[in-house]
Length: 610
Image (cartoon, rainbow, N blue to C red; front, top):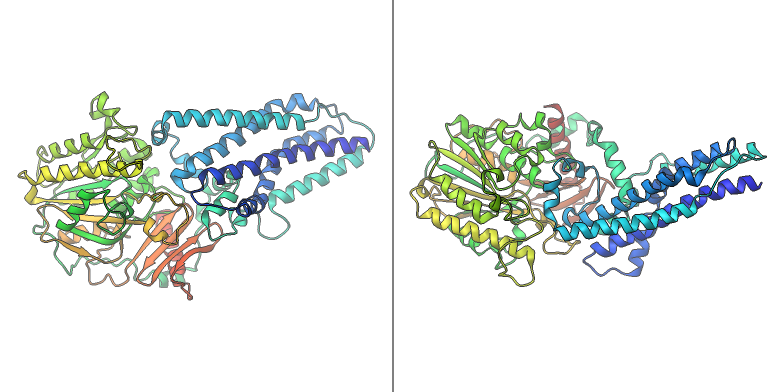
């Protein structure tokens, strides 16, 4: 029986050593990323509720030692020697994934998953959000954690396994151990298998995220990436059609004329991350964006506009193509799909406009170049069109004051009229390094204050030019900055998606505020209708000043979560646990949750089939 004990003890020690790594690493995640005061009981709950996924991952990583134990019942196995490389691999994988999860969460606010694969094709841009010292520190911590895990696994690995008597008993015991490990991987004997939602236990999403093992999250999401055809099928076709029948009307008639000309020159300024929570004009925080707030009183401010999504590549598709957003899919990263989309630029091109794109960063990042050329832009101006010094003025590329100057110059040098320029700012982005320190001890606020000052200076100079009277300036963000103010769990999550939409310029008839609930994806249909241009190509963009716009709502997708805001309230639905996380007020009929799921199914079906 000594042979049996030796082999089983090896498996148990190895398995337990991996589990021993996961619990403290998850607690480190919770402690370092928490912005609230949590109790010892909260941390205990995180450790306890996260165990099912820890057990599953430990099972995966113990498969090779288990197979060696089986082989060791028949032949001599120099276990420690054979597993040295494997132990090093496991150690560095655990350390790297946990450290990446800990480090990225403050920026992304969701667990590490396959989404990061969308951005590794341009690592310099992906790393531009963080300072060099931050990266070096994380790499050193990863190395130290990896060494500690390697030592733990090395000590848990028996030196060798030798065939002895009682082979049948030994083999049976090892196979039984393997069966138990398999049950842990599967998540028990119930019909449902292990999934991320299994460890969710709280209405506080941060506590749920802290319980999730990031290795499991990564593997689980990678397994789902190519199987999205089977996701989001919530309702039978007839029921889906009934739920979505009147949500996206195509009516180019208008109830109010916003412009004093139907063919203005147009500047669309995409303000990186500038959600309503940073503007005083929408009643959030005073003093950060005084220029935007001043312009809001002079122009047309949409006070109930919401972002469709949470990252630049997704928000651009929504704002410029009027298309839908998805929890796990970036439409821009699929050239075959994004090249088929309509856009504000392509519709303007058909009407005789010359389209130009200006961006101070890398135009190849997230497939932007392909998207812009495919959707009607003739000229693309990006970082490589500036001097080396200017390209290095910000981690992401050319600082906003430089590109705003270029934007002003472009308004005076277009080859023909009418013209349309889309301009993406970039300085209001991590790591928040800007030449502005107006707001004490607040790097984030200063980054937006800097972009706001650049915007104000640009508009003031444009007003003095001959171009002003016939120009429409559209200002809206690509997405809201969800991490500001720095508090992870709030009852008013709805404001995290709210963004300002401002129309200004000499082409505006009069200043006003429009209170209608809408999405940034409604911009193309609304603007084109004002110009008397067709809008029927825009399947999911609504002319919100149409008499047919009778069901106002705003839909938002986050990493495997969706929300709906309408005149009755707000509902946030988690797609991993299939639970309503936040609802205000309570919707006893589940109408908002049903509508949100129907919209996701409806829009994703369109994306999949186009």
